[in-house]
Image 1 (cartoon, rainbow, N blue to C red):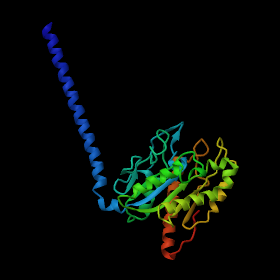
Image 2: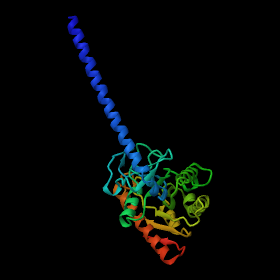
Image 3: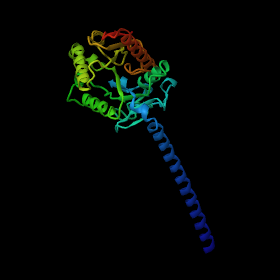
Image 4: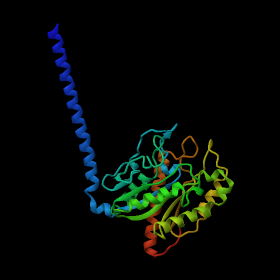
Length: 302
């Protein structure tokens, strides 16, 4: 009986040793993979120093709600939003660069309820249309549910954006544009809708001064029309305010008609992809026109 117990104990110990060995191998392989990803970013030092930086800011549609239902993302990433390890980077919430992937705004504003936004589709479309554009660095800074009054110096959304962009530029790069999708909250309130134009123009002027970029291009997604159950009584007022923005290098893309989730306000995954492509086309067209005319005109891209 004692012999059988010793034999069983020895077998148990052997199994435990084998399991420990397997766990060590899995861990080492995981660490090797992490190190490989790290090398993939750091080995391209020259390109990283010259990366083309885009700010992504606004409300939940810019944060990304494509594929989100009942507060959870379905995890589906369309081909237009797939990672491009060599050429598209994301500025993480811990202020480190990594290979960009959906959901871009994860950790900045949302966790389980953060899904597909327009940013990855935008970056992939830029590189598809201009393969020599260079390494793109995306800096997500969106804050869900924030009205335009929140985007002023001293308030969290503005200060977070300012801080993240400045840190993202420390190891080199060129600030290329701000991508902005915002206004849903303001479409519910008569007062904020009425003053949207003046408050947004002040936001852009403050940010351009803060970042020492007086002609920073701003790609504005003009607000889409919601559907029930969302009620935006003053959506036309906000849309007109966005159309009436009177600042140089403001590029306007109309989101009207893009498909919406069942909540009536957030774009579907394909809606986000379409918006990203529209923003990329508008940015590149404005860039070409600016270079050709050497002017500071206002671009209206519909």
